[in-house]
Length: 130
Image (tube, rainbow, N blue to C red; front, side, top):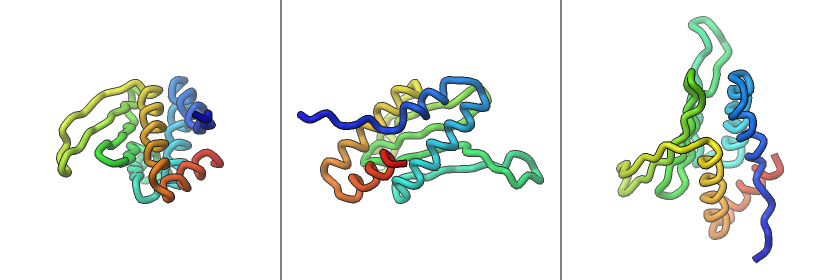
């Protein structure tokens, strides 16, 4: 089997493990990449920084791939990574994951989807090029 190139998630994952400012930038970067690559499967929630502020920050990223939803939430204590399995549009199991594991599972799910779907393959290519 031929070796596939790694996704550009390693930089985002590394920045999610560092200080708070870097975490925010890493989440913002990841959200922008996923929104651009998977517009129909990715939802990004943003919250204004302050009452009168025009600046907003990513509060959550949710990527729906098949029966699994990959959710990354921002909190004061750092990112919270979840994988929620859905059966018949109902949540059946929620797993709390380390961010690196969440990124690895998301990448694997995207690769699996890309293997059988031309649109998903194009989205994966956009992520790799971005």
